[in-house]
Image (cartoon, rainbow, N blue to C red):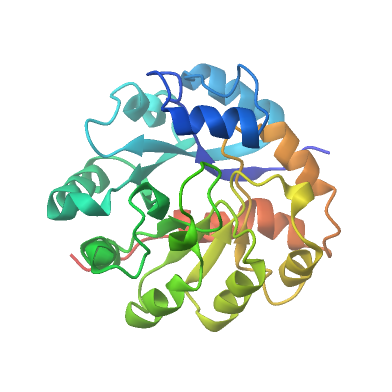
Length: 274
């Protein structure tokens, strides 16, 4: 069965430059990926793949330093099909925050991204605070990677418990945990119950491997909190959606998981403070 879906994590530039060694290790040791892993995608080809799988909208990742002009044309080539998520390095301080603000002004940016393992700084580090404040001002959700990362690097900085203090100190901030929360699924679930503006997307995590306790959370108090995402082409649209449809979900939960929760979080009317 083909159903409509939104994919909040899609990569289109992974073949633009030689990959760093840690990504090669992720491809070969973690995902057991093939040649499709490191490829760059044009808008027309990507839309064809989206149509084939039932993906209505995709949120495409772009870097904040000299974002690829090719990718920034996707939304013009196929109106209504693409929005952008911008990777922000907290070590870039205000320069990166101002660059984010300019991209939000000029393009359909619906999310900022932060990846703690890339700097080995947990999200509680004050170096993230300018990003949080700016996202609150812009009414822009921020995704923060949680769970042990695939690369062979320290991963404690991505324990979701760090978001306990973030959500407490910045209650207006909309935070979406990304790439699951393995092995801390229970902590992530409890935090989502505790904080109204905390969500989780299952990007880079094949749905068939979601633990039973987390499926129970999705069926109960987490119905409006968990979002589908693929990390395409690392994991393909078709594989992830097929596995999502095979999950033991209660009536109406699948639609929330693959479409409605993402549509509400990323595509509702924003109310920026400035």
